[in-house]
Length: 633
Image 1 (cartoon, rainbow, N blue to C red):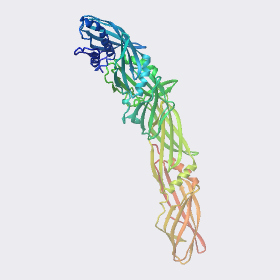
Image 2: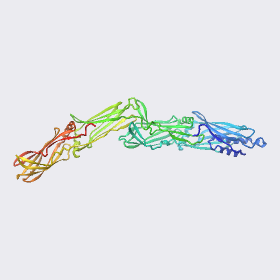
Image 3: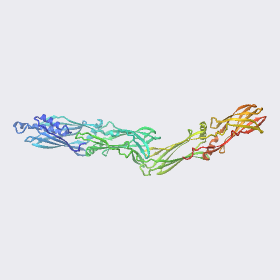
Image 4: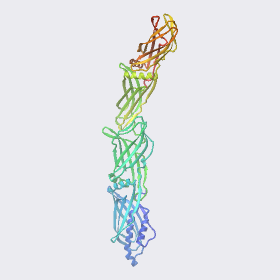
């Protein structure tokens, strides 16, 4: 920008012999500067030289007309109502006599066809030699909003025009207008693709993909201004801003302020837009105009966007620096120089929100047994670094917890609480229904005695201006059992009254398809009759205990007759009582996820008219079942 104050045109060259030639030469001399006032006055002086014509014929004066040596334009006094333009003109009169006041000059100054100033001067006279003439005119500051609207609607471009006319002895003549165009680019700093992250403490809340701003169609009363940020939420929970506010100022003159009508939500793991539709109050622009000129035609445009915290009846601000911008622009209106625009940073500090949300210190999960069944508990330790009188005030926490075994939800609960400053310990305990345990057991059997345990949770900290997700570590564990593995596939001699009569071999035990009431155990094997007489396996009896909880104690009909000296297949189906599974599971947890399993089988055999009960050692066994998925983490 050129120096504030003086705009000068130096004029010289040979004197001309006619008014028309002198006028054209003088206009070309000021063509390099704004010279809007000087051009008009010069035309007036040229016409005034015609008054010398009568004296020329007598030879009293020479034929040389007066010449303009320089024109200087400057801003004068600037008040709330008007802006003064001061023009200093140096004119050389080469004649030995003065030129009497015989001319008047009128002129209009327009910016984009909006009349900004109207001036006139009459009775202009010149003394012999060098003459310094001062001229003053005023811009009505009330016209600034009208000009501003045209500047914005014209793509931030303004053409300044001076339209002069001269009058001598009741004869008026229009003179060529002088035009100068200047442009500004106030919003260019808002258009960016930054990729910066927005932090709250050590947590990344958002990643900024791009920001942009644009003007709407301006009127004399208001100017729409839209600015927006496209952001990505990398968290597993939505990020919700309760209310977003904005303030637009120009040289500390607030021209727009307000808040969004509702909340703004960025979905989890998704991209969204934070959009602000503001409106500049053009009635404030005359005040800005005064500050612009008083600062040497410099303006700081400050767009401040912030989240609003409503606490105790007061609104507090959390700066959103990624949407906030500060731009400096300069103009050279009188001199016709180029306008410049540069970004000078954002009003916010750094890339973060300047607040620290609570953080999860630890999570302990455990199962316990009660008189009514199984209970699952979660204890979450949360550190709240904010004091009660901080900018955030009280911080609320909304937590949700879920525990599932093979997709069967055992626990699904939520809790809301207000965090006190410092360490907070939150415990949620809920009982697990017997039906839920039975459904899990069914899934466990169908999955080959394998279970995937998933405990997960979500916590949202309400910071007043936004609900910020707090990461809770998930737990994924897999445990398995092998309750039927004790059935041996070897062989076993069957003795009756001290004599070996048969051999049991190739026995297998497999789970059938469970229901809510029972879990079938399919048993098959082979028995070889070593005697000549037939024998019949009438029944198969079984008893299954886990930690002294009887899961099965029954007999099942077999009814297979084996002729002498032959082999037959033995098929039978035992079953667990699933309504006892929850009792066993409670004992398993109470015993530190350990169970003592005892399985025994016997056969009822009819031989030679008598029935015998025979213990089947190859199918009976004791073993320990251990899991380690439910302890504290």
